[in-house]
Structures are given as structure tokens and as C-alpha cells.
Length: 275
Image 1: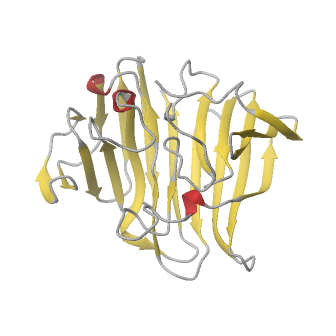
Image 2 (image 1 turned 90 degrees about the vertical axis):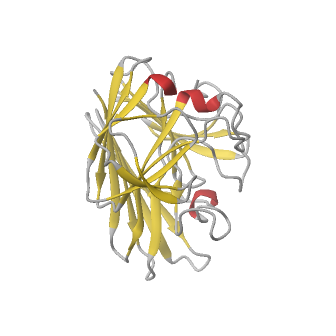
């Protein structure tokens, strides 16, 4: 089960008839309520936490019921931005972007779509990165590296599913780096998860389909300018800010640039739709 923030937040400011600033615990949120659907984005991390298009009966994104929503603490769920590194080789794990405060710098609203632009800036007000989000019948998240260094980045998307054991991922290669076993392995494709899984796939841009049998839906995930796709589920392994049974209703399929770093001006993008 995903945790829903709707009707639990404190209203702060109406930015536009379809966009408001709200707050939950220590975290400020941008809330989109539009004819095409609704979404919530945390200003900490420019992290999309919820997206439910009008056609969907369930949120497409998963959010932990155990999440404390404390400032400076990474939020478990939605689409965390792992930048400028991926993993725990440096601290904080998965980089500083997801625990940094971003700025909503622009927005556009039309009859069919809402577009938002978020910026991350240094203490000297130098632009580090930009995230564009667009919400219509689909959802697009585009990360652009503005810093003059090279960096790893991942859109670490948590999908809301009915039952992990009734979920299948299509369109994956049959070979990957198994981060649990720390070796390259052959794996089934299509893939159904039944254990702790942390697979890093390499290759060109691709489209994956997630069959969520319990919710009776397919989710399509397009990866643009990605060098890797990561599939992750902790299974019963203890994980911070997650209930003991949280793994049963979440699945991460991540759009990433891990093997090939992102250079200044380059972007990484994902598009998700419910079918």
C-alpha cells in the first residue's frame, strides 16, 4: 500500500488555480490538481512523490507509510533524484540532490498539460541542475546537468503495485550486474521478482512494461538518453523508512546514467504512462 498525502497537508499558498504550495511535517510540497490528474512534488529534492492521472484508480507511484518527512532526510518513495553520484561509495548515499532544497522557477498550465521547472543552486546562486516535469495523460521527468563537471544520475522511480509476486517486467536484457551477488549473471526476461533484487542493466534507450496483475494494469516506462536501467526490490531485508511488508507493494525500475556519466548540458529523461 502506498501512503497518500492528499488531504493530510497544510495549505500555505495558491500559486495558480491548478498549483498550490502545501506542507507536510517539515517538507514543503508543490501540489498539482488539474483536469488531467493530480501530482505532488517535494521541494526537497525536486522529488515527484505522487502522480495519478485522471484515468487511473490507483497512484502510479509508491510512497512509504513509515516516511517521517523530516528536513534533510531522504524521502523513501516517488522519484528520488540520485545525483551527482549513484550508490553509497560517497556520502550521503545517492548524492546530495535528493536532500537539498530546490526552487520552483517556472510553470505553464494549459487545458491539456501542466509543466513545472525546478532548479538546484549553489550557495553562490550558481545553477547546478534543472528538472522539468510535465503532467498530462503521461508523466515526463527530465533532468539536465548544468554543473561543469561530470556526474552520475538516476531517476529512482518507485512504482505502486498490488503484489510484487504478481508483477512482471518486460523488455529487459537477459544479462545484468547483480549488486547483491556482486557479479554479472544471466537472468530471466520477462522478469518476476521473488527475492532481494538489485539488478543493473546496461544498454541503449529502451521501453519497459510492468504488468501489475493485482491492480489489473500495465505501466509503460520509456528511458531516454540512459546508459542503464536498475531494477530494485529489498524483499525482506531491513530498509530505513519502510515497513516490514512495504516491499510487497513497490517496485523500482530506474532510468540511470551510471556507466556513462552525464556531462554539462546533457539530459536524462523518463516517460511513464498507464495502459
